[in-house]
Image (tube, rainbow, N blue to C red; front, side):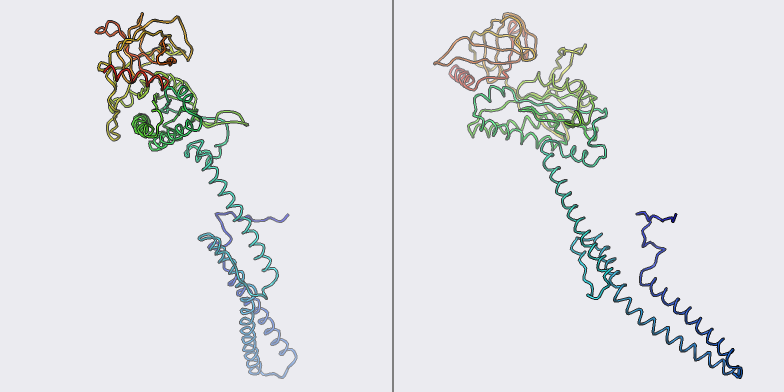
Length: 484
């Protein structure tokens, strides 16, 4: 069996040890003509010696000289004519093909066009035609693939972070199910009272408000190199530390959350001008080990993170009120020299034996230098006494018997109230005013206990409103204004 030598990309056919087609052809023809003429010269001299017995040596010498000159003339003639013939018919067309191929490697496809004489041999014409067809097919496939790749990046970049799309497309294993464990910082944000708000706006305006909000928040997250894992309704989950982790993941996440709250305050001023109600957002942050990768099945999968750290981040976010940024202890330990926080609080979480310690962040130092605006001081609220009943809420379910209460002071978002029993901070409450005014009956108001057992107020509670019907808020604000 004949052996065939493969030419690998690292060892091209036109390497340093190879000659050009011009040199190969002309050299090959010259030596072959020279050998043939040499054989004829020797044969002619030998034949003369055998047939002419009377020839003197001097005659044979001059005979050899004449034959040599004649041979040289023949070689020169054949070489010149063959060179011109081969140049036109074979060498120049092949050199043009080679030159065009080299241009394709360093310039655009337009440089690949070829022009050859009409009398070029058919085989070379077929090479050029086949090459043109093959090149056209390659360019078309390449353009289609580039357009598809750009489409995938543009389209799926709206559903996944561009970094994640790049990681999936560029990695040979990017499309396979699986993941790896790494430490990341998770940011979860949620609009407070979004369900009630969506019931007061028509769908078109609600989507408009939500899209304006999400557009602003998305830009901020991307600015701080966060990766948006998913957007569910009004909730955003962003991860800092994927696909590649950095030492600044935790601090960038906290700076991002503060920037989101500051930007929302600016956006609310725009909403006020446009006649839309303001939005309130809570942000929870936690750092920990998670599984990062493609999760799901061969039919349906998503790139995301799963693990206890995500669940804890969700619990932290659930304990925020509008305008707050709360971080877990693991995050705080990484950035405590950069941030200003309120006194830590703790609460129990299902599935975790030890209390979860959380910190409410108000500012972060250099190089971010971000600070939230001053919070409302309810001690300056308007004294108003309104009787109400309330229920504890856990996991969005009302539990236990109702508690009686009475408001002492009202501020924009905070109610100071007396309750018939002490309720621990971070407890969610459903409040119901059982009276109607001006043909309007109050709907349910949801609030979170932010402090309780204040000795100076004989056990009064401060309740941060998390959800209220805009009409109810308008009436309470009007009462507060009239009482002031």
